[in-house]
Image 1: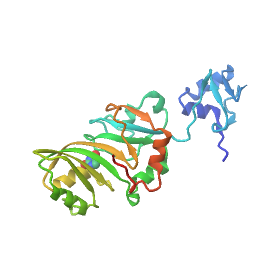
Image 2: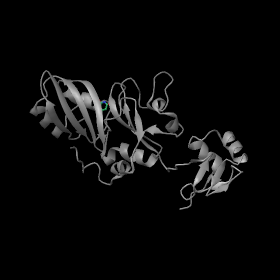
Image 3: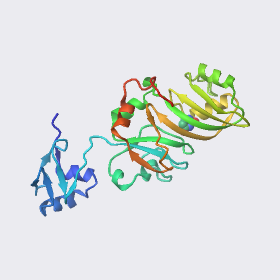
Image 4: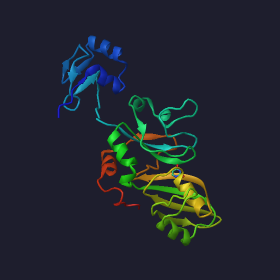
Length: 249
Ligand code: URA
């Protein structure tokens, strides 16, 4: 499919400067398309087919951008907030120039995997309750998590508002006065992990998201850091049947 865009708009979107700066660079002969100098920045180009250089630097065109972030506590999963720091505030300049938004929410005190993208269709698919996309969490819980809890979660538990959750897979890593667990959910109700543990008389004291569909958090990312997904990771997210075919090893 033909995908032509105005050179100034395209290059501004990819962080090469403001549209007026790009116009100026074009006038000064600093922009080439397939080896030919283009002086008029309103020229339409096909970034998927043409090699575009700005002052010798190549445009690395991507139709959509997919970024994984290790969200730290204290930051909200939103694009803008007048008061609190948001996940988009943490994006480095080279990614902040795209209109990225978080595909799904974590509580302010929850850490871990947040996907930021400008691919509205993928975000919709990941968040749609109908798609039952799995999300895997690690939690530290006050209280002894038992096999009875595993059984209760696999049936679904009734939350304080009367809602019965869908079956969830609870794995006990360590059980004691403070227990460590992993939990896979196929839905995303408000404060769901915390409320599920409250339903069995326990309290989540630390929560981290480890995985969305087939995409695992890169544990080398420090809280607050992010990076673009690899092509393989994008496939893992887009895979047809991601809600059921998980390799959680
Ligand atoms: N469940 C919660 O309770 N909080 C989150 O941030 C995500 C899932």
